[in-house]
Image (tube, rainbow, N blue to C red):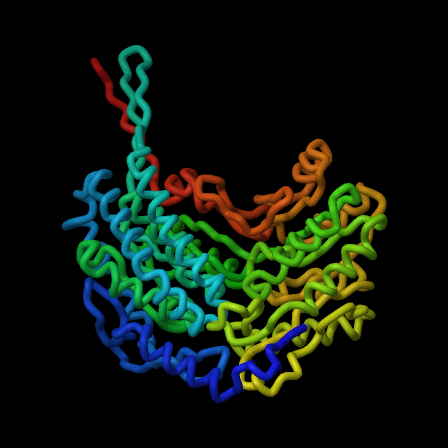
Length: 505
C-alpha cells in the first residue's frame, strides 16, 4: 500500500492547511435548521460539531434540532402542502426538479469538495456522487407525469383509481453518501407531490444544508425542510410524529427496526434501505484481470462504506490463487491519503467511532483464526496520523459464521472463500441475514443468469458493480429493507391509492 510517503507527499501540516483553505471556500453560510424557507435556531438552542475525518479538526458547529423543532418543520411542511405545493401541476413540479438538477450540476466542484471535507471520501468519488444526485432529480423530473390512474365500468358502476401524495413525509439519510442519499429521498417525494422534512446524519450534515441554500429560491417556502441533530433526538422525533404520513430511512438494519417500531404507533407507511453483506461470485472462465478489478471496486469503493459493498468473495478454486495474488497487488498499489488529492484512491472513514468499529471486527477475525493476506490495521504513516484511516484488508480462513463474515463491517474489509461445489457455495452466499445486493463475474451468460437468480438479493450485478442506473429498482431482500428506490416504482412508495366508486343509477 502506498500512503503517499514519497518526497512530494504533503505533510500533516500541508494537509491540514489545504483542508482549512478548502473549508473557507465551500462551507455553507448557514448551519441552522432550515424550516419554512428560513434558517432558524433550535427552540432549545444548542449545536453539535461536525468533524473533518482527514484532519480531526472541527469544520462547523451545526444546529441541534430536537422534538419541538421537528414539530415546527412538520407544521411548516403541511402549511406549504395545503397552501401551495398541492396545487402545483405535474408540469410545474417537473420544472422545479429540472432546475434543482441544473443547479446541482452548476455547483459540482463546490459540492464535491464539501462532501470530501465532511465525509472523507476521495474527491474523485465525491464528484461522481454529485453528478448522481443531479441525475436523480433529472430522472424523476422525466417521469413526474406518469400518474395515469385507471378507469373501469361494471354494469351501472363506474370506477376510478387515482394516486395521491401523502402530504408530508419524513426522510432520514445516512452519512456514507450524504448528498446522493438526499437526492434519492427528495427527488421522488417532490415528484409525487409531497412536502418533506429531511434529517441528515449528524456526522455529515453540511451538504444537505448547502443544498437547502441552493434550492431556497427554487422550491416554494416550506416544501423542503432540513432538521439537523442527533438520531435519538431529531430522528426519533421525526419517526414518531403522528402528522408524518410516510417515512423513508436509509441506514443500519438495527436502526431501521427502531424506525419500524416508531412508525407502528401511527401506522405510518415506511420505506427502508438497510444493511448488506453482499456476496461476489467469481467463476473460473473469466479473466483474472477482470475479476480483480471488479472485486476491488466492489469492496473498496467509498472506503467500503457502501450498504451494497461486495464484502464476501466466493472465488473458484481454479483461479483463487491468481485472483488473490492480483487483489493483494492491487491493495499494495492503492494510494491512501488526503481525499482532496485527485491521486488518492482511499480516504479516511467518516469518524473515529467507525474506525474503532472496523478494528474491533479485525481483532475478532484474528481471534477466530482469520489469515490476513494484506492490511488489517491502521496505516503506519505519520502524515495520516490525524485522520480516520484504515488499511484495505483481505481475510481468508474464517468460518462462515464468524463475526467478521456475518456482520456489516462497513469498512474496507473483504472476507474470502474458495469453492468448487456450486450448491454449497450458493448456500453460503445466502447464509446471512441480509439480501441487498450481489455480484457475479463470468463470461458464461447461462451460468451468470442462473447464479443471479439463485442469489437471495434485491439487486445483482453481472460483470460490473456499484453502477446504479436510474430506472432500475434498488432495494433488498430479508433484513436489507422494504421498498425500492431509483425507479418509477419509487413514486408509488410516495403516493397512496384512492378508489372512487360511482353509481350511475
